[in-house]
Image (cartoon, rainbow, N blue to C red):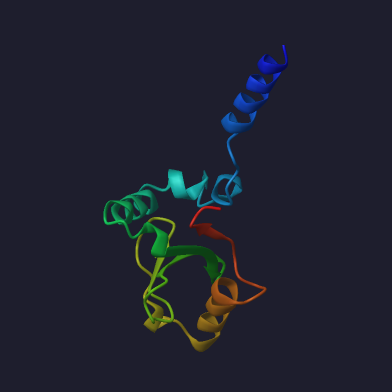
Length: 122
């Protein structure tokens, strides 16, 4: 009987699915953007194929109230590598005003003010 209870306990523990930041997030009209935004899923899958997905950090932020995704390869020395809109189109950061860029840096890169990091999953 003790063995059966131990077995059931282990099954329950190992079958529980962890909730990730992305799985609890509802942005761009989808819940869990890592799995449900096709362009983001494809980007992550491509990096998994190249075994570089652990070097990617995706942070959700805002520019002028619009949700954006900052995709940064952590080994690169760029300030902002690639920024995308909900539809997967790139944001041209060179066209942002100084105020817009400050808002972006605050909501994406700010130590205590940045949006959620949805990749890597934790």
